[in-house]
Image: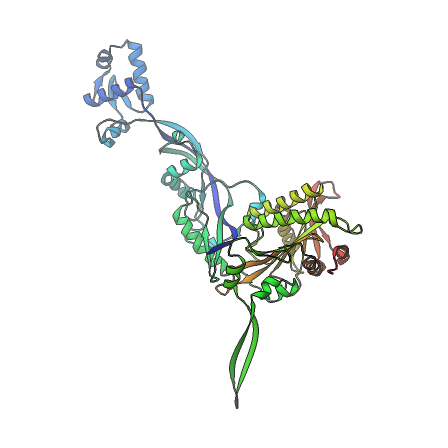
Length: 516
């Protein structure tokens, strides 16, 4: 069993080129043209008058036929003597049955996109600023990684012309089959093309990553991407692992079931031999997957109010679980909330400190789907707030850059500031008093750098109370709130950055329910 737990868009540097060229378009020539070419080929050279008399044409009719032959690049006229061009003669040589196949040459404008490593063509990416949030690879160390000259592009246009035609034209009848001549070529702005990479985990905890199937992605680029991704993953920042604390923080009975004590012993050498033992908790991942996710859905527990989750929340299978559970919780809250409890106006997504988190448009789609569901059920949308780590000494432009990516992903506000100790791997998505999703970026035994999100979605009162305690702790450590707003100088909508006070989150206490 392999479980896909995350997808990441790799940033492949690319450049678009403008190419004005003449291309060969295959077609069946008129019978008269075909017969005239065969006659000239048989005679090798033929005088115009003999040619006209053979066909029984009037003078102006013969002139028109000769002009057609010349415009098609099939015949040439030298002082009244007709002969075939080298192009037409080549059609006879290239034919296996002695029957020439002719083409016409037309002018074409093309706008191919080449990756700047192998100079093979790529599909056009969808427009949208959120694609800026790709995982950048170390292309500078790759062979020819900086090669982006017009000479490379010109050679690549000839070499990959058929692939370019397949990318640009779905109708094969509209495709040309060869480049006759490049008249002009120029380069546009460089940018990143997102290429999705999927991450899988097996029951033994080993991790695999695979490029999404794409017939138009060249094999040489696939190989290079896999190599560079492995290099990039091996250089990611790691954080201390406190997974054993996660089930305790949220009082999760399912995860506790698979935590077992492991005792290690050793010897210290001194004047005498003394044995030392230490005990720590270890997660039985294989057993957890077999028993909790065997059917692929995740165990339901806490009297039907919680469900186990494996993988990122924005992955389609988990998003479906999340929306289903959230819908149920929204309806329950709307009809059963105490009169003194208001409807929450903010939903918080505390983001883990993982370089692989949220790097595809699946995050944007998830934020949109959650917002629309709440608006549909309650008649009014809530603000969805991203809560992410930022260093206390981070520069303002760095804070704005991080915030802009999340705002482009659909978040209404972004809270930035240091994370509390031991919380770097925690992730929660909580609508206060209504619903919570909590995950931990579990470090697999097979990899120091690749982590798998493991946790639950729940509407259980105790888990909701625990999540608000955690949320208060995280939010009160933040220093700034970023959002799109109107500036005082009249420049209109712009990215704003305000200071945050811990008192802004005191209202969260009003959503804590006491468990009987």
